[in-house]
Amino acid sequence: MKEFMHHLGLLRRMNWVMLAAIIGLIVIGVFFIYSATVMRDDSTKDLYTKQIKWAVVGLACYLGTAMLDYRRLRDLSWAGYFMSVILLVAVLFFGTQIYGARRWLMFLGVGIQPSELAKLAMIILGACLLSPAAEKFDARAPFWKLFLLTGVPMLLVMKEPDLGSSLVFVPLVMAMLFAAGAPAKPLVRLMAGGGLAVMMVLAAVALPEKLGMTPEHQDKFFRAIHLSDYQRDRIEVFLHPGKDPMKTGWNMRQSEIAVGSGGLTGKGFLKGSQNILGFLPRTVAPTDFIFSVIAEEMGFAGALVVLLLYGTVVVCGMVAAMVARDKMGRVLCVGIVTMIFTHAFVNIGMTIGVLPVVGIPLPLVSYGGTFMVITLFALGLIQSVYVRRPGL
Image (cartoon, rainbow, N blue to C red):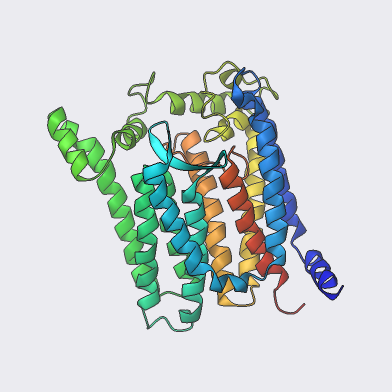
């Protein structure tokens, strides 16, 4: 009875505004996954019902995690990290290949995406490593140890290949280091180095052809810098939007048309021509390009609602970080918020054409079982930090 009353007290302390925003995003996602698949006669027409089931499982994990004391994760952080690395290695050998990439492991008929598990495992381990050393960062071992540990799953995810998910690890580490109190100078240097690396990759794609390199020499060059054909094609489409609009550039072009044609209030639910007529491919409409479906059918107003809901989740997460009982809680919240923000920012950016298409889903809205459950589990950890804030 005493334990029941304790958990009841924790429920009362939850941030209900955050939970309402989360449920709002899930409901929007279910409706527009239905819209993106309703006209199909194959198995994808039932994706919205599967999404509802995953959402129920995820919300159960969310509430369960909120009741769990996040500090207990210290004893499991290394085990979770090594387990995620093992799964990432396993997916390279035994993973199911879909659209040329091995990103899923099948277990009892359910597809599991280890890269999503690895992100959360890295956040938890990072929070545990950085919190003891946050008081004085003169001892720089945790600083560099975190980068070395992050490099392992990051490279394995890139090998799948999944460039988008691998790049998410970078802002995660930077944000957690900042929250832990790392010196500004090395962080600025690392950010500058990351910016330079991005510029070098873009130049590597844009310059060889302009320098008169033959296709054979270009292929050798791209192999030398470990840039796959599909990654090169996506960057080329971003740099030259009019290039190959009927093949490689089709998704981005149709997404931009869908978003732009929505106007202020949209064409109406189930009335988006780009979506319903299949110009926006049904293979990506319920997943990576779900925001395009929302913007076409609900217009700027609907897109703004989605952005406000994400803003609410992010602000609530940062509030939890500010009132956290300890540095582990603060770093944990910042890492999770950064993951959510990065996914939303990159996904929406690629659907409107301001960022390359990198295949990152929209949190709580895009179809995906593993991503839904992991995201809700992570957000539950933020609630766990919030309900255990001091002064209550």
